[in-house]
Image 1 (spheres, each protein chain N blue to C red):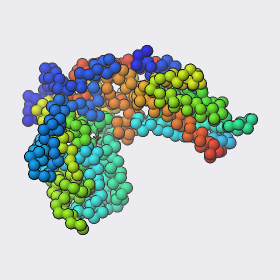
Image 2 (spheres, protein in one colour; image 1 turned 180 degrees about the vertical axis):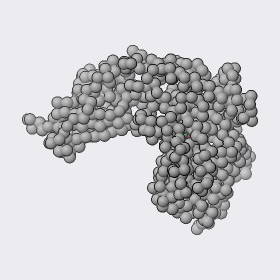
Image 3 (cartoon, rainbow over the protein chains, first blue to last red; image 1 turned 90 degrees about the horizontal axis):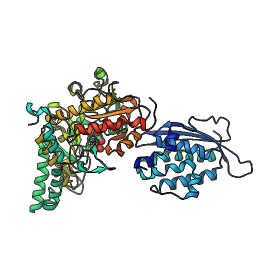
Length: 161
Length: 433
Ligand SMILES: Cc1ncc(COP(=O)(O)O)c(C=O)c1O
């Protein structure tokens, strides 16, 4: 694989073109909702991510019921947001935290695999492994995850929108 | 020597090859390809003579300047002041009108904070000419780099002055049709770029300077992009202050230049205070040295001035009119080539007349970061982002852009290689026509 193909794997190009979760969701009347706006100051890229949590049916951690995002960004940041949407919707916030931690670890790993178990959990997100070899692009891949963390924290603390 | 007619024909292939050979870095490879450096607008590469001058200074002469009487200190001081003279000559001013700073940003801030200090009553009666009153106006333009915008926003916030701006046209030039409305008799400062680092537009300064002076405002010129790429005679332009950076004009990083009209430098209060900028210091009060030393507090960046001297001499030897003509031809080649690639939109004038070779553009459907990454894979270095000029990007309807900028060692082949690679970018990302 060429240097460039390690960055732009086909799955990533596909996600950048056919984006999942694009468009903000309605959260009126939701019990727990949060929104976050993040910018990447070096390139001026922006994302707004809004999500809705629901209480767990069995008394466990709240479940991320739905999310949507909009913004301007490069293929890496948009693919990352699309992949993130697929990964986290329907999971409870503790699982989401674990995935976010795996993803951040992947970005900090200089392009080296985290091992099958953790990468399997990240599904298409594992294809972003090559980004970690391009330090200037790591921020692009993390932009959506930062918005997710912030919006989740707001939904848990602030509650209804 | 920089404006003789025979030099205005550009360098010619042979001389260009010789100039290029002076830049060791241009022989390296990036990602297995020959480096094509098209980011001169961000920072220039350095000819060997600049690197040697800085190294020789450390090997043979190093000492603090304007202190002590040993031989090294005297030689270092002479080198430091000689650098000032060579840089002054390149831009058509007198030696004592050149103040060393760390970069252009620091130079502009020096003026803004000097005005602040005058407004706070510092600098005595002489400095009162700079003092601002609430409602006074500071004029900037929509084309400015953040370095010539944010310091004026801050000055306005500190003093109660009002910030106004000359808008840009769709072509990425200044809209001078509203000049008299924007620059009113409340204007005290007009801060304007000589050439935009996004659209490449060279400002028609004469009407701006005339209007500013007619209403009693001073003109602060951002000459960062012009000084490395075209003849600049600051006295002839009749501006009051001007700022530029060494690293963009073949010199080292860590050295910048503030030009100030002699009587204005004498009247402007100092900003950074401490050693080397004083006359007499008692436990209570201090009197200040004459400019330029008044503005050069602390141990100075002597090696960088020596490097910058070599850079200014290198440019002067080539002749700035020849440099400008050389780059004009390359810029036209670049603009024509971009116009021939479908779905590429240039931000800025489409011909190389009154325009420098900093060429920002948008590729429909592909983010600048992605454009830059694909070019980098071919060893081609361009800038991506907003280039520290968000307002002009917003004005032209984009958040960011890709920018190719030419320099003194750029070849027609560099431009061809770049255009060829750019033509394939949309297909790489599978963007439909
Ligand atoms: C037009 C213009 N003004 C100001 C600056 C700031 O220069 P420096 O970062 O060297 O202070 C730059 C370069 O970045 C520029 O292109």
